[in-house]
Image (cartoon, rainbow, N blue to C red; front, top):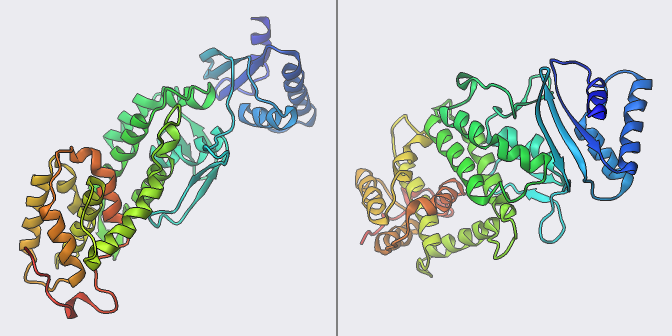
Length: 371
């Protein structure tokens, strides 16, 4: 306890958020104290918890652990716990860093090698700058234990997600509790955020207000979903699945194949919905028009709604490439809950649409024959 109070005296200010690690073993303790002394001699800003962990990880060349984690904020100890093993690196099954691929034109890719990179790059995006706040000066605020005002969150759902999952994420990052933050939680965060963005989207000056946010979140969802299986057994690499579905929709549009799975059905439905809505002459081009389709749970209702919007625009010219995918969707049935297929429907909608004519405008192509 004496060492704890001595450590608290090293903190630069009681009004600030500080995290400390108090090592049990001699090697780590000596090295961490040496870093504190070095900062004291040099003056200026002291290294924080993240910088100390990163330097010790690099210097000692071994996995850290057996230390007490102290989270101190506004004169109060918010968390004090023993960490037996700290997993700093984030690696996939082939021992490579986690990769966020640009699958949907989000205009950025990330290579995430450790938990602090995950915290700084991914959490601001998926929680809309409400949990980890990137300020205008590019500094970071960490609100794991703060009182958060819902009015400063992007949506009510953002506030609920932060309050529900911030402790789980804190444990994932700082205590290496990899089993608490599951695929189910990750999927809930991502889809809730994407659906909120779709509802909020406005189309003005030929620009979607939420386009970048939606595509960034889709990239993160499909790139990292497989990473949150605790034991990584029977892992579904969703990014590979998207590539395969894009190939299958092209073959479907050429009329050389049929829909053979629920995944192909959902992806094709997203492509068909986008294509038909593109025929609208309305000023409202926002993504919010997609929301009613995403609220449905069974395939028959979805097909009815797709048929309804087709009838609205059937006087327009439709490409030959639209004909087979549309007919295949109308003929396909699934007992599965469409909520489970929502990520794939979204991926179809936000992928490059393969149903437009190649080499000429739809206005010059044949009308689609509809069964």
